[in-house]
Length: 432
Image (cartoon, rainbow, N blue to C red; front, side):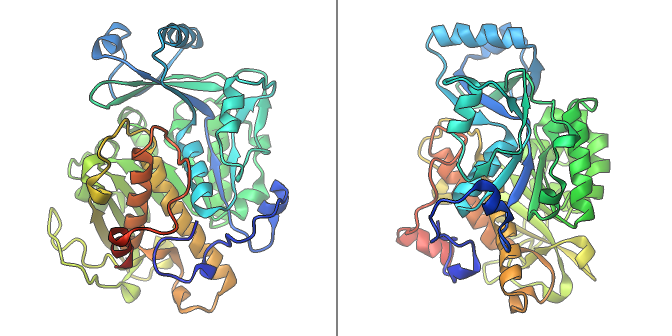
């Protein structure tokens, strides 16, 4: 897939080389870039239900929570026999994002986590592997004797998603299985707040160890926030963790409210930039916001009409590129907002994975920036140490377009890359 926009594609990932190569060789090839992600490996099982069903089992609508494995098994087979299971997909916020990143960039990523060591044809682990991009390197996963985790995704008629998690072995990743050198050379380390749900679990401790490795190597840490309930439960811990480790924070408006206590998404993004360097905030039918820090000396004024909402002329500097706070002499906050691409799909079957898709686009741009800096270090594109290759305005268009693709299909993961050739409307969309 060619990177969107009218640009010289040699500055991005090479896409013309299609011959077979080993996973390890591809990851360790000099000058190559990749993303590493730590995840609770899950299979998402989608089940349309009524509000009465949720009430019967005392499940909180729109939340994510853990149930015991026996209850999950009982509900699964009951719904399976009734023909109500509409899909079984590899899931997990980080797993979805890594898959989408590799689909978009045609470049490798590395998944860290646990998987059943005895995989049989047709079981959950088999479905996870079969439906994950071959560019996602799974060879660093820790094998376990217990089955994979499952996320029962209950979809009510209003499109709201409620997740009941059956853990299996998903929290068993030992820090001994962390490939230190691989993390140190990654373009980004992607983690999820879900891994902090049980602070005593090996996975939680391994995640903390991984972010420490990344921080020491100046590798950007990207955090996907999880759900509103998790944000409320772990608010104090997250407000301590994010300023210390996180460069890019991804969340939706309800998660932003739980973290910041601010209802307005633009003001929530402004507040989040006190903790991190860049924020992706999705707001459903109202599109998405991106906020970022940049240095005042390299800030760029937009050529688009200026808009005022809760912040006056908030998009004035949206043509700026994101930077990490530590690389700014005089950091300032910049913002952009975009409405759903083409108004959104005509029909949305469910919203599962849309935020993960948007984050994959952001990761693609972060990685493209590192790739270009390695290839052409003296380019004017690197007059300052930028975090992104593109302006936050352009990134918002890319993230918005990728989200549209996921919302248009009944799968939380991209089934293909974006079209290399867009129609006239889309060409105008990218050209600005």
